[in-house]
Amino acid sequence: MVTIYINDKPYQVQEGKTVLEVAWELGYKIPTLCHHPELEPIGACRICVVEIEGARTLQPACTTKVADGMKIRTNTERVESAVKFNLSLIMANHPHECMYCEADGRCELQKLVHMYDIQPIFGVNVAKEKEIDVSSPSINRDLSKCIKCQRCVRVCSEIQGMNIYSMVERGYETLPETEFGIPVYETNCISCGQCAYLCPVGAIYETPDWKKVWKMLNNKEPGKVYVAQTAPSVRVAIGEEFGMEPGTVSTGKMVAALRRLGFDYVFDTNFAADLTIMEEGYELIHRLQEGGKFPMFTSCCPGWVNEMEKEWPELREHLSTAKSPQQMMSSVVKTYFAQKIGVKPEDIVMVSVMPCTAKKDEITRPQQLVDGIKVTDYVITTRELGKLIKLKGIPFVNLPEEEYDSPLGTSTGAAALFGVTGGVMEAALRTAYEVLTGQRLAKLVFEPVRGLDGIREAEIDINGRKLKVAIAHGMANVKKLLKEMKEGKRYYDFVEIMACMGGCIGGGGQPKNLDPDILKKRAAAIYSIDEMSVLRRSHENPDIIKLYEEFLEKPNSHIAHHLLHTHYTD
Ligand code: HC0
Ligand code: SF4
Picture 1 (cartoon, rainbow, N blue to C red):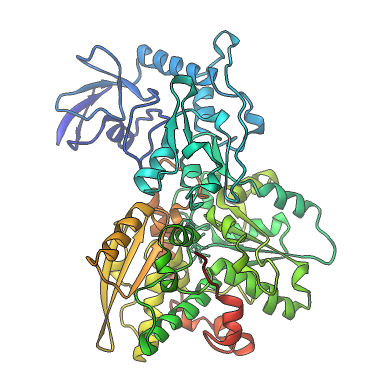
Picture 2 (tube, rainbow, N blue to C red):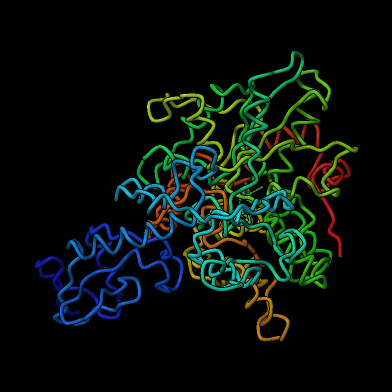
């Protein structure tokens, strides 16, 4: 520990940390635009400057390490005028069109400009209009709004290991571009949307499908049935859009809000997560008993599926053929549920609320059609749902807790776990263990598969067979794991892959949040849902059992394969 002084107050802080890290921990609101807790600091924006006694110039807090006896000042006139000057320079090269911008209300630049009362310098604005890249179903890029913070470049290389962007040109012309400036969808981009998640402004954002959903709900057609489903990790993050504490579970309020937006039915993707466990779990059991490709990989993350098809085609046969819960839910809604309420599949409009931008891409895959029908019509992100709720003037925080509709609204604690890295594995192990051994697990929590380490592994004894499993999240970790498996340095039977750090709780469509502990808080909320659930094993979900009895026959049956499984391309 070292002693530092911030604005004359002494503090004992941990050596090796940066001034910004400790200041934020102590509650000093030092502003920044380029820094993000997930990334290595680069000191590019110069918005976080502080005075340090003995230093001739102001120092960026994000790259300056604390030292014993260091005297730091965050609130002097010199600091304030430097911040204002640096913000003015950014604003001189930034279009002033907040009212049309997708980031409006959550833009970090907009907030600072208001806070520091920045006025245009001499009325000068040299921002150049640029063509918006709308090539991807997942993200749009409007580089005229780029503030050169490089967060997109860094998250894509440091965390995702994808290296889709690099900074090109110099000075005011510098921009994060794809190789040869080609549209992003023509690169190896996997649509995870981490660049949009970390973008502090409106330069990269999810494809705004909220506009279509808004228009549709305000012009509902007679005879059509409007159905929504909500992914496991949306309920632990949506509250942040309304100023609620990170880690608040808002399931009931979210369901209530969707009804008030105009949906006729609100179903739970968690129900389909239980269904996925039945299909994927039985596929694993089948491969173990009858032989099949090992290691088996999970298939529910479309970012990972994209990566596999583009970079690891030799693993095609190793992925489970189970569709993601999103797609299983929509397939069941447009068949089983359509029959139950006596409507044609094409008269159902299915909207998914997902933490994920890659889910927007997933629904465009031709292999996902069922009898020629697109089962999910629109995907909106958690942020987009927040926007719709605000637009409709729904008082989210004060809403009552409402229940999902039946019969596709019941789910188990195992399904809730899907939203966090390791969760699919834990849910699958609960079912595989109990089905294969015929015994009930005394302890349901598999500690080794929990946590936020990038790569985790565990060994589980099932009837004397040692099942070796691994989990990886964040594509850079995934690539490392796959490379070492390819080199024969690691061997597993079953591997869970999630493209985003933390799994879907850290998905590209989640509320933007600079809290360094945000993933831990959202994960804790997910685990609390499991702990509070009466049912915690997917194979004990009574509505899943009924669905098989009434419609799907048994896991991996012919009809289950037709509706709930897919294939991959080279
Ligand atoms: Fe996920 Fe999912 S858990 S991918 O991460 O499997 O998006 O939350 O909805 O489909 O269930 C995302 C989250 C889902 C799916 C589920 C899976
Ligand atoms: Fe989407 Fe989740 Fe995969 Fe991220 S980890 S790409 S949010 S499915």
